[in-house]
Each structure stands twice: as structure tokens, then as C-alpha cells.
Length: 329
Image 1 (cartoon, rainbow, N blue to C red):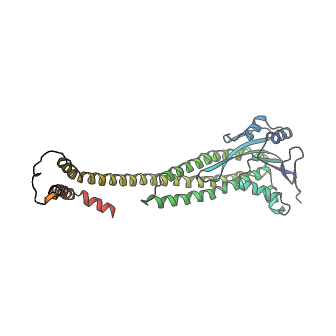
Image 2: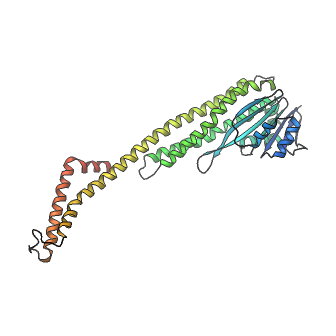
Image 3: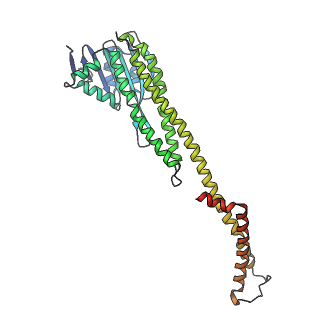
């Protein structure tokens, strides 16, 4: 028969679960008062307590004679700016206890603890906590790593949207590409240290379990490798899209500049002719009066249109005008 007790510790008012002699304490939104009480009860090092209260610690493992202290980072989802938020999980693990310290935004961990605390889920609680503190730690980390696949699906979905937008001339996608690259970099910056910690953790916590934990943590490492492989493929793909977008944008810009250049060049004759005949001096043909008061206007238009038409035919012969038409279609 398994014994279970869900209570709040009398000295620090922290949620805890006792099952078959294994105590799981979950500290959400830690305060100095809560962590100080824990330190007194379990003789934790004050530097580890400070690490739990700080949000800027790097992942690490501190080994002591009777317990191990671990800091892990996990992405907790994608916010409105498409950048995963990073949450810190601090863990104290001993022979008969496991203490998790976090900000409450690690949804799989919160849900697992709440289910185990429910009196109606004795079978689930026994499966999660009935073996050892080392196995419970594996179960927690495994749930958090599996949640990475949900975030990965969102990243892949964003990649598909970027692929469609890259070839849409009416859509500017440079910012989205930059944000996506930052998203992948953030994920890799979390997962690479996590993999290293998992490999080391397999050896360090074996003393807290009679069962061989290596296969379980190897399975976690394999899941992390799959996520990393997918991120690496996404990174290579987004680099291709970046180069493609740059090439298409450059071609579009060059086409616009070329068309404007040709239009400006074709307008040069009429500009020059109108400037010359607009001067208040007598010029050849100024005394001709074939069309009455419109004679100078007709003469100006004839010369300008003739020169412009000649330049147009010359550009078309060179293939410039035809090339723009082909690019447009």
C-alpha cells in the first residue's frame, strides 16, 4: 500500500506531496522567506538559495554529499513578438525528497504537480512518484522536453508562412525572417546546455535510485537531439529564404531603378527643347507662323516627340524595353 499526503509545510507554507516516503515540494514564485526556511530545514548552501532567487543564472550542477542542486532553462512558449520566453527551473534532489523552484510558468510541471496532489489520482501519483526521487526528476524533465515539440510545431508553422511570403512581391518579409532567426537562436541557446546537463545528470543522481536511470535519461537526450536537428534544418532553410528574399528584393529594386532611369532619359529631349525655346531671345524658327499662335508649340512638340521616339526605338533595339516587359509578366 502506498501512503500519500498532500499538505503545506508548517514553516514555509509551501505545497508538498508525500508518497511512500518521497517528498515533493514545489515552490512557485519563490521569495526570500520561503527559500530561507527551506535552507534551514535541509541545510542548503546559501549560494544555491541565491541562485534560486535570481533569474539570470546559467545552467549548472552542484554536487554535495547528500543532495544535488541543478539549474535548467526551458522555453515556455512563443509570445506576441514570436520569441520564446525562457524560464529557470531550480531543483534540489536528495534520497527521499525533490524540491522544484520556478516562477510558475512551466505549464507541464505545474499540471503534473497538481494532478499528483489530487486525491482522486492515486494511480497516476504512484506511477510518477512511486519509484525514487531520481525517477521523479526524470519524469519532470521528460514532460518539459516533450513540451518542446509543441513549440517546435509553431516554429515550423511560422517557417511555412515565411516560405509563402518570400515569393509574394507585395509582402515585405525581411523583419519576419530576422525575428525567426532570432527565435531559432534562442531555442538553440537553451537546448545545447540542457543536453550537456542531462548527460552529466545521469551519473550524478544514480545514487538516489536503485533502478538504472541511464536508459530513461538517454531517451530524454534523444528527444533533445531530435529538436536540435529540426532547429538546425530550420536554420539552414531560413538562411536560404533570407538569400532568396534578398535576391528578389534586389532584382525588384534594380528593375524599378532601371525603369525610372529610362523614363527620365526619355524626358530629356523635351526638357532641353522646351528650355531652349523658353528663353526670351530670337531662335531659328521663331519667326515662322504656319499655325498662327500655336506654331512654336507645334514645333516644340514635333522636335521633342521625334527625339524621344528615336531614343525609344534605340532602347528597344538594345533590348532594354523588351526586358522590362518580360520581367513584368
